Length: 205
Image (cartoon, rainbow, N blue to C red; front, side):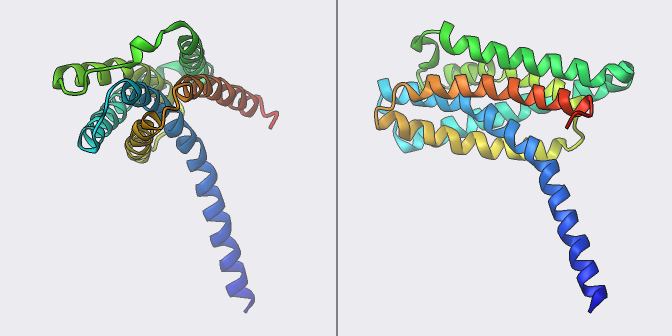
């Protein structure tokens, strides 16, 4: 009986540890989904996006966000050994820069920068590429911190796909200001995560 209780306790601890390790990856995945959410919302407000188009938009954005993040991760992971003790500070600076940029862009860029012609494949892919540039830089920072690229890429793909569909739905309901709020939250969220990483690095928490 005691052996079973010990084994159950160990199993619970392992599950808790794995969840705590996944939590930052889930947070980054949600944050990376908020810009595609905003673009899909703004586009849906000004144009009648049918569900077939919504699925196409979601798939393209998810593919680019996951792929470009993975590309950035590969670069970051490759140069990680060259940074020695500066790995965490450099990663934090990169992530904080992206967070600050997203936060400021939410106020600086007009709604016209978030509206695309979804019937044009070239415009859709170009938009997805531009939006995913920040993801590449963020992936570079994540490559310095995390090893689970397959899990991260899968989470990003799934989250971006779901949030893009939700963005189209929110646009159809006329929730115009929700897109800007999502971008503000994304930028603030990344900066908040940076603060947590620094506190952990300094062993304050």
